[in-house]
Image (cartoon, rainbow, N blue to C red; front, side, top):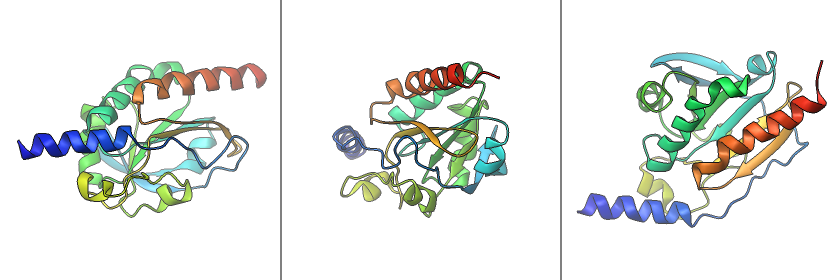
Length: 185
């Protein structure tokens, strides 16, 4: 019963979090390299390497295996072919948790990166702005639910912040489509 109450309390706090994205359209996305997992296997993810291949969606989420984060990961996985771009999820989880998350909720379709020290979360200014969230989520650096679309030159094309996970994928797909319309080769 205590576990259920704690879970409901965390959900209520996250839902009440203010929506903001510090990096605005046109800003330079901070470069980062993190340990990541794809299909349960660890590797080093580098945003600069991903951007050499085209645009990238960098999305931050509070914690693996929570209701909204699992739903968001499932939706990204279901739509990965529609992106035709790099997608990376970033959270304050440790790599062990993300190895499992990458196979189950991400369906081995895209990588998720571990930022347990919150360094990238801080660079992107997406720390979850809820007092006590770290204690309730049992992690030091939970991220706010924020998605960025980054152009190959590192410029932020679009941002979207909302704790409701239901519109992150469609918002990033729409932004990517609009960007591609103006960047046809």
